[in-house]
Image (cartoon, rainbow, N blue to C red; front, side):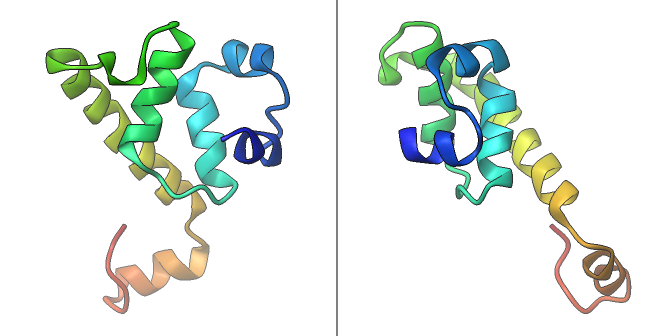
Length: 95
């Protein structure tokens, strides 16, 4: 995780804390990290000083919704004009 954060330009724990989990995870995805829900909620828990597996129930469900939205937004932002055109004419699956 440290290497991925550094590659995404997040060099210190303070940088990570200042950005917050959502912005940091979006940057990780934009820099090539494959989205994974456990990594996402573990990051949220870490920034709260909680164990990664402390996320349960309604809190976990809410984070899942946030993760899905973040993942969709990041995927849409990364699409090229050609991808959008090919999707519109039915040559690729929509993201």
